[in-house]
Amino acid sequence: MSKNELSANAFADTKPHYHILDGLRGIAALTVVCFHLFEAFATSHLDQKINHGYLAVDFFFILSGFVVGYAYDDRWQTMTIQEFIKRRFIRLHPMVVIGAIIGAVMFYFQGCATWDVSAVSVPMLLIATCINACLIPAAPGFEIRGVGEMFPLNGPTWSLLFEYIGNVLYAFILRTLSTGALALLVVLAGGGLAAFAIWGPLGDICVGFALTDENLIGGFLRLLFSFSAGLLLARLFKPVDVRGIFWIGGLTIVVLAAIPRIGGPETLWMNGLYDTFCVVVVFPLLVYLGASEKTTSRTTIRACKFLGDISYPLYMVHYPFIYLYYAWVKNENLTFAQSFPGALTLVIGSVLLAFLCLKWYDEPVRKLLAKRLLRSQK
Image 1 (cartoon, rainbow, N blue to C red):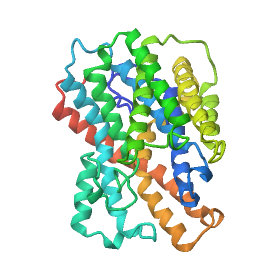
Image 2: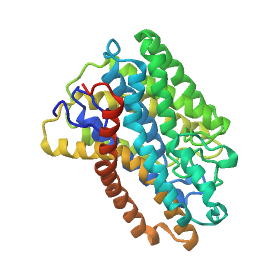
Image 3: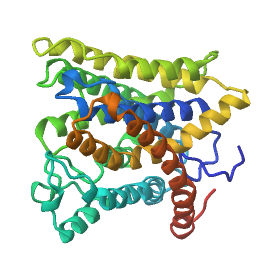
């Protein structure tokens, strides 16, 4: 990869990138799409198909911490906090904006008994769009869908808010910690996350998307552990000899996401223990092994590059169509088998839209913003 090639992982970064991690990120993004598809048929977290797809967010946070630590830890003698924030803004925010716009365009086509879109005026929709695009959580009076999401036009935007918080914490605090202090923070945050998952009210960590106590507490614990663990991995990383981790790791992510809910309403701790094991043990190991392998297979490199390139755009553009799919399923009282052609079209269409957004919008906008906002792209 040339020094000036635009990466989907860290804008204007001159270091080589980890192809396998790019590919694993893309596979995790696809599992999120499938997880969200089955929300139309779930009555609660207990019977959701692709039951643990929400754990992909924790994998994203670990990857983000690792990539940020790898890309920026040794730059602070020549880079200011302001420049770092600009770089992360350039990398993250264009897709936040387009996700809000797509959500607004699709909003009036998503009517169903669960949310009455006809009751929302155009001015309210425009206000909601601006709030979403500016990454401001919707307070109850501005939550136009009525289901309690921070970002009712594009639900997954909540994790980008936490991503921003993680980057700010890194710039002002986490990067200044010694390795020992960072390790202690990871242990404490991991303990807090485990306690929330195992003994908390939900028995899982599918939280962070709403302005409620359990969502805010759980969301911050998910971020604090996973992002900090990624940073720690970047500091301690020493490659090991490993082969085939893209295929093994990708299959592991899919299997872990697809495992049915463990235990029932009376044994919530069992599922919480599973979530903790995945996030605290398996995901850091996958990142470590994924960063270790230096693949030379052109096929694998191309697959990983494509998956890595579309992973973030796919995550940010698919959910407005999930709302549409949900409304269609509910309005027509469809089974999954009956709706399968629509589900397949949604997945394929979301991948294509993600690729088009990447090439025609995200990359050009980032180049323009970098030219305007950054002193240097070196």
